[in-house]
Length: 96
Image (cartoon, rainbow, N blue to C red; front, side, top):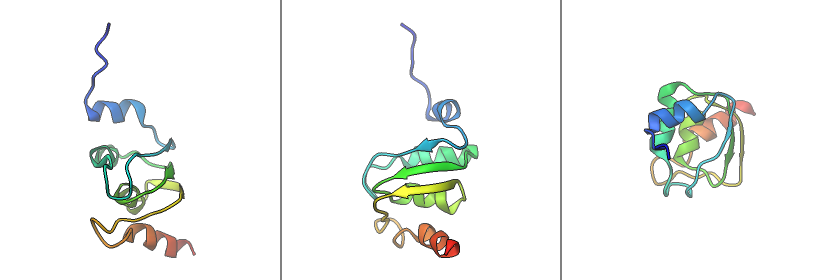
């Protein structure tokens, strides 16, 4: 049986493509895959359709870096890290 273990950098490069519809686990500021979010940013991946509920700093960072083309969620919060979803709120005001 072949070894299927790979680094996070390799996994993001292989499985995450521009324009993908993606979602992350966790709840607002708890148990979010922030290392994966940072690696997505580092690799320059973009144009995501976000299925984000309940979102927090994960999607707030991606929205702030203009990596999201559609944001579908049930709840956004981020009070554990920064002001409550400040990048999301800024983009929402700009879209209005």
